[in-house]
Image 1 (cartoon, rainbow, N blue to C red):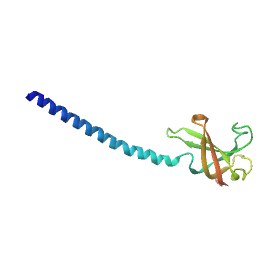
Image 2: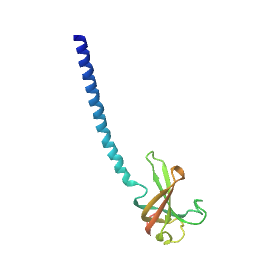
Image 3: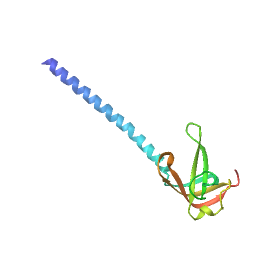
Image 4: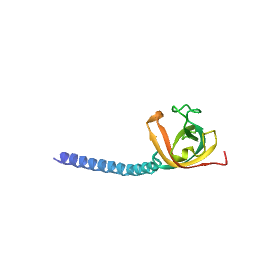
Length: 135
């Protein structure tokens, strides 16, 4: 009888400690979820300021079936490699500087992403487009 009572108490303590350990792990994982929600502020559908080289998407990059202004942005990724992003310009301000010829510009507007993966296209509905002095 004493052995059975000792076994029952041992099992009860083991389950109590295991349950509190998993509850503590769940509490530590919740702040990580809020950190990812902070990164959600950089969603592609948010308003952004983009600085890059103004080029013709059709002539220079071979994107699309007709000429369209685009901004080519080069930045460094997390691993240190250079990453190029192309934002196709739409809206009234897209034609303000004429056809893209390699000038450095700063554009502000809403970014929309169509598609997924490497086939995704980024569209920037430019509300303002200005030429940058420094290259």
